[in-house]
Image (cartoon, rainbow, N blue to C red; front, side, top):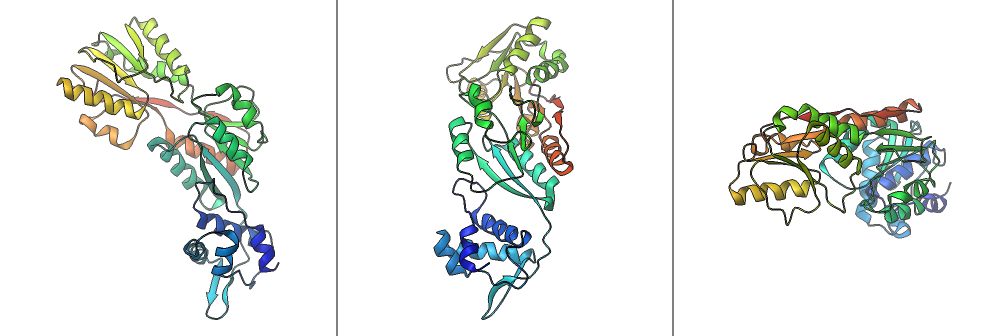
Length: 342
């Protein structure tokens, strides 16, 4: 394959969160793996790639340096860059779609990537919980993938999820976090939101009994499943807790003796600010439970109680399904960390 043909085969996506230098490196690696490039073949120069792909020289150079560290290419003065190793192990090509960037999504991503190791080439996309944006990303993919891994959490248009995801072959689709009605044939690593919050609060029942009312802060525009509300109501009704749903903390007047369960990270910050303004002591005057464990929460105010799935295990399970190539739907365990905030 001559340089012009190879350059034309390279697809660099502006929609991908994967750095362009890694997209370039993956394209060269795929060329070697697919025998488009052979041992000793001269690669396009940095200038050629920069001009034809409309990317900076620094990006091309960084991509080539990455390939050199992998011992896939080498370079010599006067000759330029060339293929130095034609024995490239075949990898799973995976597209991972995150609904948003957050501390717990990073835990999933890191565990997923670490478990896959060198067995996969991973491209990352973020669609900001916007189903229209996800549709656009899927329509504008520049290459085919072996697996498509999606967190299907949307602020609006949840009823359109199955239709949007139907563009992906179900045998290649892996859902993370939740299952989607109508997509029963695909793999999934999921949470049981209604059951999980009920079970978590049940374990904290003794600590919660000193509070006069439980308040679930569940913003109207959140992408969290409404099954959380069902589980919360079910627990409060079964165990006789006075309870209320709060959709906006900005206008909330906090009172002593109430316990807040915060879904969104911003709401955790806001309730703590309100406690400071009122001079309330968290864990004594006001109870606070935060959804989703992150490393910092064990240290904030001597420890914030969290109810959370095991995000690291979620990433590991997803990677294992891909590596082992087994059809599976796995429910991730849920737990509560009881700390001084209640």
